[in-house]
Amino acid sequence: MQAELLTRRMMVVFSLVMLISLVFNVKFFTDINFLESTSYVPIAQTSLANVGSAEMKCLAENIYHESGNQSFVGKLAVAMVTLNRVQHPDYPKTICGVVYQGSTNPNTFACQFSWTCDPLHNKTTNIANRWTESLKVAQVAVASKQSMADITEGATHFHAAYVKPVWAKTLRRVAQIDDHLFYKR
Image 1: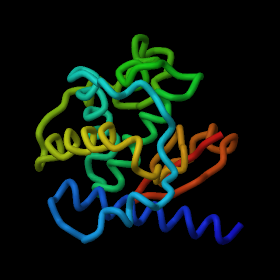
Image 2 (image 1 turned 60 degrees about the vertical axis):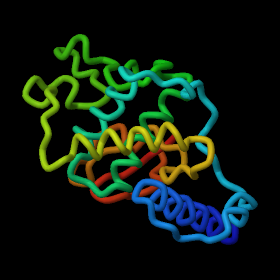
Image 3 (image 1 turned 45 degrees about the vertical axis):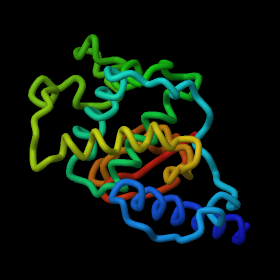
């Protein structure tokens, strides 16, 4: 059990190093064959291969509003939760569908992501290049979903560490990344 956990953690570290090297054009490894021979825990298969610009914008907006002040890894974790929901049978099958689920009637308080029901926060503005980085994270998350380990271990829910939603008691906590706690069923 501990060996499996250690292997998972190592895969996450290797995946993050690869991701950083791709995004920032930094070479950490000289032998790519080493990485290809490593067994990854891929993000589940889904039909995200041909994500259009509207879907990418929805993902970037969610990253921006939910984790704009977090590290690159924190933003990536929010992206993974969004993509994990797209793959889950209980959620819509598109990124925009997941992001805006429940937001058509803000009076019901059924928004999956609070910013989608908050008229003061549903406009994307460019604060300290957060929007640019959110777009980059969205592109990296979608482009590398098959080869990158899921740092949230398949989480479909998250919340800020300073709040205690009632639903959190019904799920299993799998990670804390920056200021967010991540959960799955």
